[in-house]
Structure formats: structure tokens, C-alpha cells
Amino acid sequence: MMLGSRMVVGCVALLAFGCAGAEARIVCHEGYQVVGGREIATPYCDDNFLAEVARERGFAVTNEAIRNNPKLKQKVCRWIGSDNRVRHNCDTEGGFHGAW
Image (cartoon, rainbow, N blue to C red; front, top):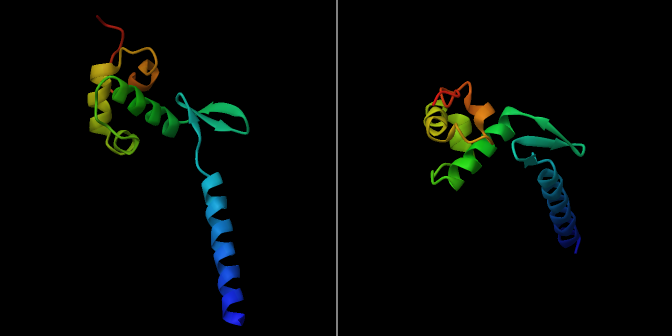
């Protein structure tokens, strides 16, 4: 019986630890990180939003690929940098600069 109760306590502890980790994830809203109910600009969320817009425009890219591959980010910016939603993100990535 003693071993069974220890196992239950261990499982409950692991479950509680797993739930705490899930609450600590970064929450983004259209390129801004939500912190304490407020939105702040962060490169992490900005890149995630660029990837989201790229997917809407037909690119098969992941958030991680945009964040970790500067060449891919430049390529995506060349194609969709004129989109007002991501223009600010692409200004420094060799994308659209307002020239028609």
C-alpha cells in the first residue's frame, strides 16, 4: 500500500508541474506579446506573425523557420513585404521599402 500511495503522489506532482509549464508559454496577438493584459512588441511574436501572414499568402513556412533562418525571412519579405501588416518587420530584411 505504501508504494501505491507514493506513486499517486508522484503522478499528482508531475501533473501539477506539467500544468504550470503550460501556463508559462508566450502568448502572441498579431505580432505583439501579451504580458499582464498588455501588448508589447517583441521580435519573437513579430516573426510568428510574419510566418502567419506568409502562410495566408501561400508560403509553407513555420514560425520556427522564420525565427531561425534569416535567409528564409528575407525571401518571404521580398514576396510579401508590401503587406501593411508586416511591412515594419520586413523593412530591415531586404523586403519592400516603398518603391514601386
